[in-house]
Image (cartoon, rainbow, N blue to C red; front, side):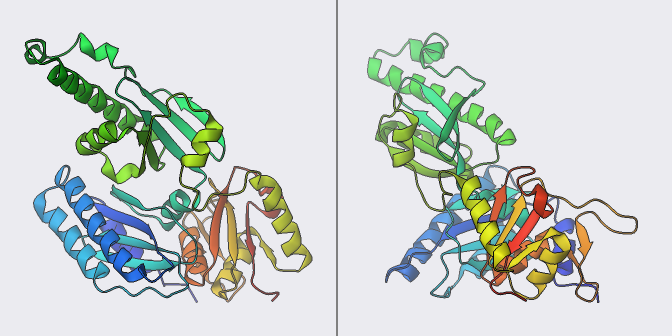
Length: 360
């Protein structure tokens, strides 16, 4: 029998391509302040979303999204063992999932939604962008675990480039302090513009480290608040990568040597006969809700076969057809975790593997 659990959602999402879609992940506190903290987070998210939508979309579309988000977020009581939550809202559809995995707070506004895209961004927390700011210059890093690579912002990264290009009204200021503030704002606006271009290629959360004054001004003028995951105060322009790693958020980070731990985990699961390899075996295990950890390559897709849609496979369980997104959703729903790995890291396992709770 054909699996139809996600067909309605897919048709609604496809019909909403020209409208904004909102996806949100939030961590859930484990202490007595859990409910109060969640309400505060949701109110903060709604305010940020309202600002971001107003800058891009007409009022009727924005109001639809805000109204549906408010309905979904009203009087939430997540199970006590859940560590995070996923929210998806379009003008015609809303979806909520509570997660066993820790996640970073994240807001994404775009024209489409796939569970794989969202979980890939949120659960691959070892990868992000780091923007260091001071009143004089900026440095943008691509961070992958403990490795930091400098990225080109595409705009001058030192304030000196903007001092001689200041507007005429700035040149006529008699107050040097006021002039510095106007030039600083011009500098930060260009850095924000450069960051926006980088985000088109690197769809990752952004951490910003800056002095309180610079951080406050950048937060005020930035046109991409939905991409900013956190702010840290301080001047670390000359800091080494090891020092930067210590002050960045650590939630959900994979070990320093993820490849070694991954191999050990797969070997242990295989010895205990709890390892499903290849999409057919993985789909069958997901259907049976026997899914503790799903591992798949970040560019994984199924070959298109005659008469079948892309990324759809027939499992061994009564010929049920599942998409990759449906497998991911089922793993999340039964309390499993997701981990994305590099291309060909799972080549010998059929490029996708699943560690089961028990041997079937």
